[in-house]
Image 1 (cartoon, helix red, strand yellow):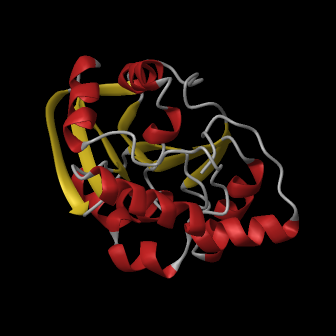
Image 2 (cartoon, rainbow, N blue to C red; image 1 turned 180 degrees about the vertical axis):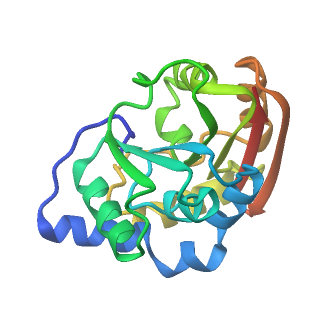
Length: 218
């Protein structure tokens, strides 16, 4: 995928391909969205920020957890993705909970200590040159004691296997650039990034061979 911060407009055909990729059967079967939300320890009435929300893969699950007394801010740099998410929310009767927000992940226009959880799916690797800024902003807007939980691609130990996985991604991701690298960080790299940004109780687990979930608490 493109960097989360990069503004882009799609033709209707391009949008259809991207939505199919983001909402495809593989992601649904893996259920990593349910796992991320489970790790976030959400409860009714919570206010959640989903950065790089895309079509609402995490936001829709989060909205069911926080219920009518809560709120989910689904933020993305692409208006077309927000429009798709909003239509999904309306169809499921969740549009009073999910609020779309067009913005840049590294410049969050929210006050300090205002979210009960921040979640992201496949965003950090896209901002590998801005991880310090991104994580610092997330830390700022999280309430004390609350969690950041992400799912993202994991670099494996075998270089040849990494090449195979990268080739597969370039063949399936309609937004992938020829020079894009998905497997930029190992699990230990992600944990180190969280810890350097002052997150505590940092934990990570491999979800499948080249994907994982990482969490940390402010």
